Amino acid sequence: MKTINCIGIVMLLTIFWGYAFADDKQKNVEGSFARAEVMVQGQLEEGLAELSALRELIADEKIPLNRKLNDLESELVRVRMDYQKTSRMLDSHTLDLSNLRNEIKSRHEEATYLSNLMGEYVRNFETRLHIAEIQRYGEIIEKARLAAENNNLSKDEVFKAQAALVSVSITRLEDALGGLCFEGEAVDTDGLVRHGDFALVGPVAIFRSKDGNNVGTAEQRLGSLEPSIIGFASNSDAVAAAQVVSNFRGYFPIDPTLGNAHKIEATKETFWEHIRKGGVVMVPIFALAGAALLMAIYKFIGLAFLRNPPSKDIGVFINAIARHDKNAAMQAAEAIKGPVGKMLSAGVEHVKEKSELIEEVMYETILATRLKLQSLLPFIAISASSAPLLGLLGTVTGIINTFKLITVFGSGDVKTLSGGISEALITTKFGLIVAIPSLLLHAFLSRKARSVVDQMQKAAAAFINQVNKTPYERVKMKEEDSYLAMSDN
Image (cartoon, rainbow, N blue to C red):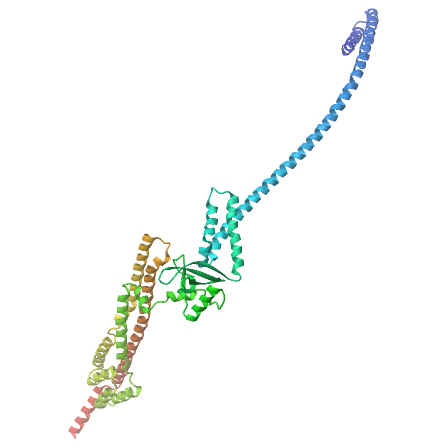
């Protein structure tokens, strides 16, 4: 139909074109137009008939196509619903899978936590046991400890081994409520292993050998994995303990310190043993201490007898000097005991000389006295400074011995290393013990000697001042003038 319409339009345009440019051909055009009109009309009718046929064909085909389209749309709706349902199911499964993974991860973490908790419980359980109980539970503890380290066992088997220890610990707790008795072995004081029975009540255990000769508390000694028998000091306590172990009835002797009293008693040592631990450096330290003490006592006794001159005696002496009474001044100087009197006596002998000479004479006496008073004091000072150095020497040698032991035995056994550490600390301790009193004695004796010298200087200054106030030259001139006057008369 589109072709027919186009042809008609072309023909109409041709007719119109003929009218516009050819008036003279109007008649021919009219005839042509009539023919074209007839032809177009025929074509139009054919096109309309064809259009009608096509419409009928389309109408016939449209109904099944619409039905098919409706069916396809219904199928599309159903497929979409299935897709949505499947998507929701997939999302639900994905969420469930994610939750399941989180649950599995949480369960793995709980299993790991429980495994660590059980391992820690196994370690702590052994440390909380009494030394006597380790023999009883040693096998199951070892089994539970090795199970966690055995890669050939499954997790269920590991948990079963650890849970068995928990079950045993609960049973032990129930048994310990009223106390329990069990067989075992302990080491006596001679180092022999004795087989017997234990009676455990709370943290206290007592042991009785099968022959009944060894009875005492069961305690752990340093460096030993076996319980040691500590005997009772009282025979009545031993009898009561033996009766409790045999019959599980009677008075139970308890050490309230839980064995700490025995440990503290074992650490006690005599003074001589304490010194011997210090090593050879203790010999010069004590020699230095003894020499310093003897010299300090000697100097203290010597200075104790030196008395300060009374002010009254010094005043009598100064008054005699003021009166120019040499004999009285000499008697007053001799009455003053000690180095002060000796110095004043030397000054009186030269009282008629110049004051400079008198001062030099007395100063010579002061120097001699100072040297005598300060003798042996430097040795005490040397002792005070040398004793810490000797202690430091002992410290160094002790540490060297400690490192030698570490090289040989390693650092696991503290008891092996205690000898060198004790030597280091003991020498330092006694070095300070010697140095501090020596320093105090030196300061005390030096001050006492200095006070004697100060008293001498004070008396000498008073003497010189009095001589300068009333010199003997003026008296001599007065005596000569009076003698000349008497001669003239």
